[in-house]
Amino acid sequence: VDEADSLLIRTTRGCPWNRCSFCSLYDGMKFSLRSVPEIKKDILAAKEYFGGHPFTSCFLQDGDSFVMPTKDLIDILETLRKAFPSLKRISSYGRAQTMVKKSPAAMKEIYDAGLNKLYCGMESGSEAVLKKVRKGITPDSIVRSARMAEDAGMDTTQFIILGLGGRELSREHASETARVLNEINPDHIRI
Image (cartoon, rainbow, N blue to C red; front, side, top):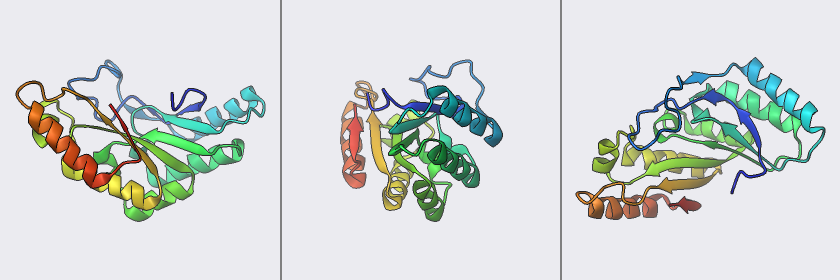
């Protein structure tokens, strides 16, 4: 629903991790970064195609735009804002392990260039559950990335999967997820 009327611009193909046991979204797709000229060409083609449509939101696809070098992501964001000056929100998925590789200053530069909404697949706050489902992130990286995003000014949504711990880890999944969510206090939580 959040992105129902958004302009969609593809910055990457697939997911840079693509090993989570519960996800089949990018099965059979090799991850790749799209080149800046290719993305800019898409932005200009969209501008021409939509003929001045006043988009207020844009979603950067696919699995994680933060894997792009910071200068490239900023270049794309600046191009987007020039082509579509009516944009109020530019959003992306943000993977905790990728985001923590950026500096706080880089996160602020990305925000200042226009990326102001993040969707983060936390799934669980339990280290045991995250390992079990091969998520490739830790509760520590979830907290650090969420704080970096918040400090930069970004609005965040954390995604949680109910029952992800199964019977064996259900109590730990629930209590550790609640603990991490309370620690980071995201703007939104999606179940």
